[in-house]
Image (cartoon, rainbow, N blue to C red; front, side, top):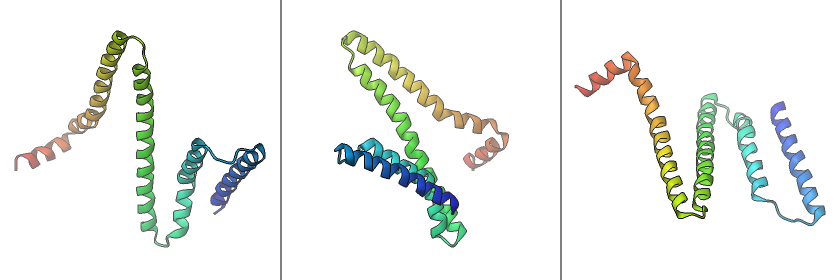
Length: 143
């Protein structure tokens, strides 16, 4: 409960002070970055405490917490991966020379394909190194 209080205090402290600054400076709107930051910290820090307070059965609480944590991690992973690659891609598209753009795009696309194929195959490689998994997989395939 004290953790929830500290989170609420921090959220109120930052939101109200930002709102006061914007009000007295004449700006009457909130930027998308500020709104996204507040939503991110609310979901990342406050969700587990709110879920703990709302459910009496700990198994339901743990399941909901697991699902929300996985969804939040997936959203963050997608944002991290796509934002960096999109920035690189738009930088390539804004190049002046058509020849340089073509060479850079070819190099970047081969880099991306190697990177993604390697990362997708790595778990499969590690799984196939395990002898028990190979035996079980061969039993399933040959039945």
